[in-house]
Image (cartoon, rainbow, N blue to C red; front, side, top):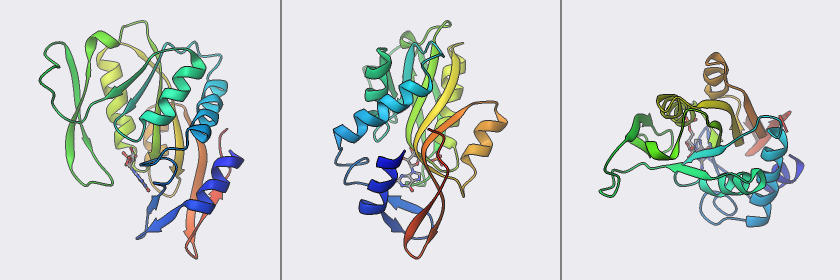
Length: 193
Ligand code: 5GP
């Protein structure tokens, strides 16, 4: 996605060997116009899949996911990373190791929001080693629902996430694919949409 790649080049900052900071438009401050365009690209990529729910994980997946849900005209559900006393029954959970925070957390969705005949599009901000997406797939499968694909805003193709998901026979659609970082700038591979 041209607009997204241009924005990453303009505003992204590389931290250490493998982290891209995009807090001015995606992970902290949100550019809703860009998110709306991203949501539409995801919706177009899955328009034949009869998606019934969009699922993401808090917090930074929520902005692109809600616009994908709007464009598909379906509900968006975000998995919660912290136990919540209002979540009392029928909770679907899994453990997810966070790439950026380097901690394992229990991630959960109330079972009442996912049904056996749901066709789910997972959306997340980044794909690194694939642990967040894998955790969401496990939760959706616990509900007996079908994962139709994983939509990623920024994939770091030099990490193992895509391989992990494709080995699970899950379709991955990434709007920007970073092949490597070179001279303090991301170098893009061809995006999926
Ligand atoms: P994974 O589970 O694929 O290893 O990592 C994906 C999650 O880690 C995303 O939900 C995102 O929050 C975070 N993440 C991974 N890599 C980056 C990165 O380079 N920058 C930022 N801001 N977040 C990242």
